[in-house]
Image (cartoon, rainbow, N blue to C red; front, side):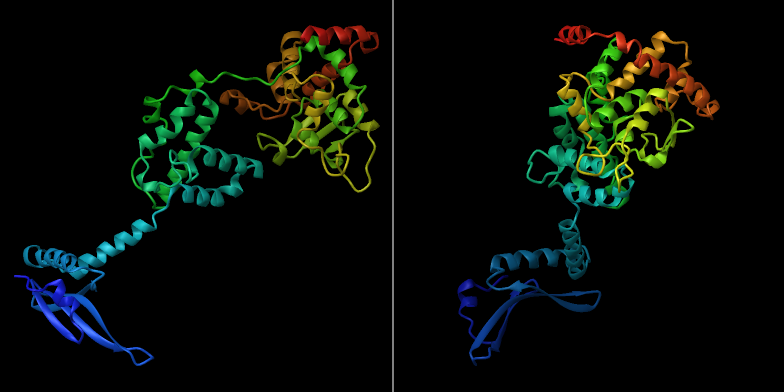
Length: 422
């Protein structure tokens, strides 16, 4: 039976060792500090015999570990020895190991940081990596967001936690929510392979969230880049030619070549062969990561021949203060023209509509001019060339169409075009 009391233990002033029963001992030791002052240190010990071997283990200092707590620990360890024939020292060591492991388990916010640090080299550009991080931080990984995942251990994240993050924006910001789901899935997949979690990925779509959320394709509203009707193109380009500056010339060049904004803005003279009427865009600047040859029509060549060469710069369309045009330069030209309803990318749709509706040029030639990858795998397998000769004829027709009857277009027609859009 226990026989110690707190009054008795608090009164101890010298070195001693007292038994409380069931293997629990109270012990005190004396020690002297540098000033010569003597103090007494009090602690708990549990002694047990297992397999013929006697061992002891400390249970902590008194009174930090109270008498009642020490008795509770002693009772637990006595039961392990007496009834389960287990070594309490080994059991406690394993518990401490698990506690330490638990304390260092990766949170979702930490997993995002490690995943992005490892995957950065795979992103097409720094902006892509920033978009990944921004989307995850805004909706999921910020530890300050109590409804998010940031502060949760990746091993604890379940399906309900993923739904808690996705459902509020699934119907209102469908495209963002769909991308967010995929990014969470990637982070958790990495965490699983890296040994930070086990089991199925709660953010996976097929056979999982697909049963709980409506398909994004059934929800999102398809938003196309604003495009100018091809019948209005001649008047538009006539007005565009009244604008000065590299950005306006870059916009017209992009229309005539149906190239994407970045492909035009980052063009350098070394890529262009004026004699062969070819512009070769390197793979790293193409969306499909494949080198693309652009057939230059006479109107595009005329723009290039008229451009001044800036000393110290190889940029075809340099920025006013050096370097290359910003990604908003052509958008600003449209804004100054009062055409904020249009986008540079939309002129690719204008070309596609014109070519498909008014010409007999084959679809694969048109798609090749737009640097589109053929979706039909069988068709793509046979389309090994770039159809350059046929594309040259297509772009020649396009250049002529963009300049058709320009001399006969009156200012009134341009005014009419704008008032019709009001």
